[in-house]
Amino acid sequence: MKLLVTGGAGFIGSAVVRLAVSRGHAVVNLDALTYAACLDNVAPVADDPLYAFEQADIRDRAALDRIFAAHRPDAVMHLAAESHVDRSIDGPGDFIETNITGTYNMLEAARTYWEAEGRPDGFRFHHISTDEVFGSLPADPAVKFTEATPYDPRSPYSASKASSDHLVRAWHETYGLPVVLTNCSNNYGPYHFPEKLIPVVILNALAGKPIPIYGRGENIRDWLYVEDHADALLLVVEKGALGQSYNIGGENERTNLELVQTLCAILDRLRPQDRPYASQISFVTDRPGHDARYAIDPARIRAELGWRPSVTVEEGLERTVQWYLDNEAWWRPLQARKGVGQRLGTGKAAS
Image 1 (cartoon, rainbow, N blue to C red):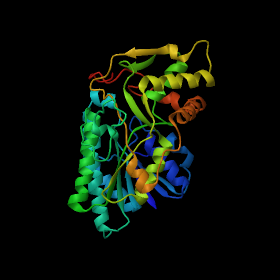
Image 2: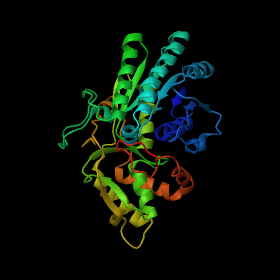
Image 3: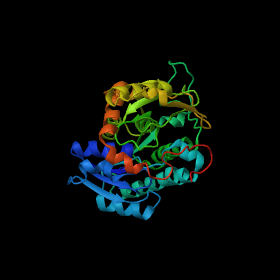
Image 4: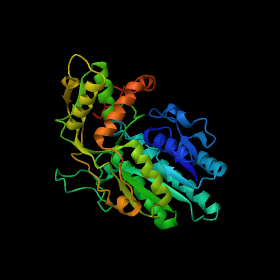
């Protein structure tokens, strides 16, 4: 199968690219190389004859048409998106343009190509989204997001992703475009851009800086190891039912405080210092509209496709911490990029 992966130099996209190539799929990585992208993420497969790279912006329809015509993919895995909630609060415009208008351009380019090819039965447009479109859950552990949960986005980021989800469903219903959708819980793992919670905790801890936790650290997230997520995404694009959506979760709920304390304990073992890393924890003012809890019910993907996560959050965090300890040459240059290391999400644009 030849896959066109958008956002393939990003965190989740690069995990998909690396895994797909390792499994013998031809992959075209389409990425605009904006601030959170890094071609080092795909360095392990960059010289593989199955891999090709196209630098292009999904807001550029002419570029998309050229890439579809040149590479003639069997399926699209659409991951390109602005994805940082805090940045969406400070500057929502990029999220509207990329996540909504960019997805519209991808759908139209894919539809044009699919129709020109004679509407091949095997073609798929796989749209990758987030559980944040569903809003916030109560503390009751019995209540989880299902594929039938009504949308209730609370941030500019989640609203833009909800909009893109609706567009994908509309293109399926109106034009017959063969689509599948997935909504995932919080990802973590190797190559995670150093503005997100887990790499921030690891890198601030190593640097002897305060480890910031919003509010009282009571917000709950379901954590999904990125390589498990990539495995699920490839399964869905190959075997998912047309028009269907699948929730992908790690089945690993933790409060933010519990998560940070686990990371600190791992660092205490792997890189001991003269005081516990947990002593660096600092509670900071919460961000606006911070959802209390996310939790995914993955019953559909488990029942229909037989997928389950392969690691617990403790196992995945151990691998992640070790990866950051071993790969300073990767993360150190990224810390100089705009906004990294600054407090974002206050409604004021980063300087």
